[in-house]
Image 1 (tube, rainbow, N blue to C red):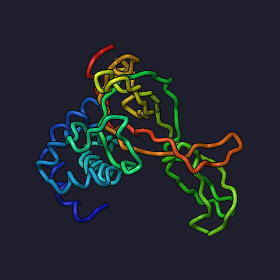
Image 2: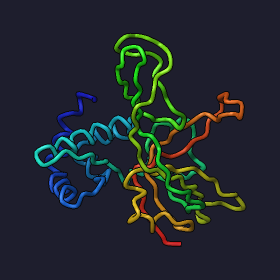
Image 3: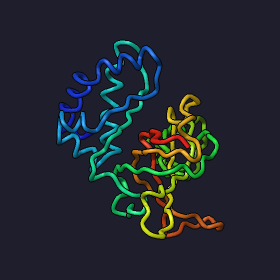
Image 4: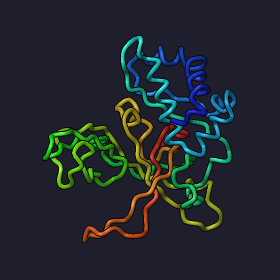
Length: 249
């Protein structure tokens, strides 16, 4: 956690989000949605931190949001962001490698919506030598395993003894006709939704033909050849923080 922002983030959560957190506790919602303008006007430094290092910044905000639930009951509330500034609003065709790990906002038509599937958010591995349990966060599309035991230092294969699964869904987002110039063909990007964004009550937003606005972190994963080798070329996708329907199809 960035210590320079601890006080400002804690203050924002306690002063501005208290009532919203209480509503979430009473309704068992899975997330709190924060308007970027609210946090940026409260602390421009934190706003800039979100734009520069969104994954770390969101985790820091999430820490204080969930810390605020401790007097009641321990929850795992997700933090989602909407209404990014114009500097972070892009057309799909404008996304480049320099945007990887940055948070952006795009608008487009849902071209395809895949089935909801469970994915491992973290996996517990057991060391065969000392029995130590190693929890490994799964941030990539391919399974990440420990290389050595932090307890005894042994290398080798580790046995999977537990998983934390979350629901995810992939949608294909296509540029809207009004965003195209001349005879340009629409560009596409994969968007990965997870947790409460794929709840049944949210399904009416995830329908092919709907025009949606997505806030997400630009991520990449290497193309894997049939032989199992990784290419030096990567595919870019959006890990969604927030999605809202602009027009129903």
